[in-house]
Image (cartoon, rainbow, N blue to C red; front, side, top):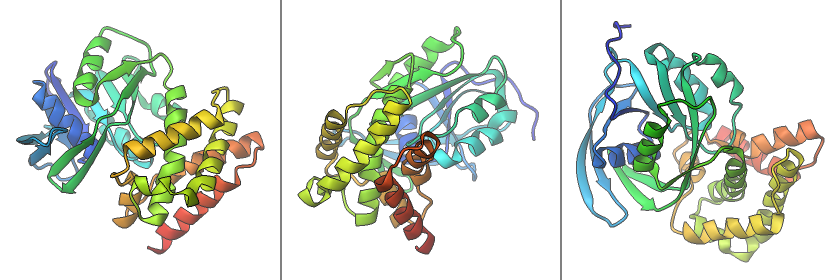
Amino acid sequence: MAPISSPQSALSWCIVGRGAIGLLAGARLQQAGYTATLWLKQPDAIPLQFTDLTQQYQQQILLPQPKDQAIARLLVPVKAYDVLNAVAQLLPYLSPNAQLVISHNGMIPIAPLLARLRPAQGLWFLSTSQAAYKPAADHVVHSGEGLSYLAKLTASDGNDSQVIAAMNAALGPVTVVPDIYPMLWQKLAINVAINPLTALENCQNGQLAHPRYQSQISALTTEVCLVANALGYPMEPTATVQRVYQVITATSGNFSSMQQDMQAGRQTEIAAICGYICQQAAQLQLSVPVNQQMLDRVLAKTATS
């Protein structure tokens, strides 16, 4: 590893990978006057075509993060199963007071990640409903406006306002909350209801509004509420199901991330979505048969695809 020089400038962010949300964040950061670099397996510059919500096109260049520069601000918008590995690889390149923002679908244990960080390094979680997709490897389309919630999982310090401002530019509007988990449970219910069904049916989100999916959506969502309530995060089933259908309507033309992953033959985040519900339910001695069925069906489908 090359010697680490001085850290990034105050308006610089390193983004891990080239997924749709990461490229959306990079494009919007650059529009706001930040410098966005990418941490990639193959450190190449990306001539990015960005299509915003108004269908305006902009050509940008996203450069690779220099390996000899300490990373002070890091956005990790990768799949749930890749978070720990991605951060572990980057630990030697982080500055002593680096700020890390992770963002993914589903739930993963945070304790192993916190244990790897230095005392002055900060960890944040950003939950977003911004929608983006990639029609080509170097083209990202901002396909739906959403909201983001941001919470710091470590102690507050003087860098907090800079992180909040940057995430507002990247994936805002951002609401800062003291506890991210109520929002994560709400989003998890939506993911549980939409992602596996759209993946198995190979359909857009809007197709789930058909009455034939009603019983499955209701059962999946009710099981999430059962587990959340047992863990101290109150969720009312009827209101949560209504919220799921609001998202189905608002994102009717979108393909879920799990549908895209399954069609591309990639690993899905089912273990962090339905799998997390099943894991927590087992510890609580609760029954969640419909989530278990979805977990089994997606795992079987991806194992044979």
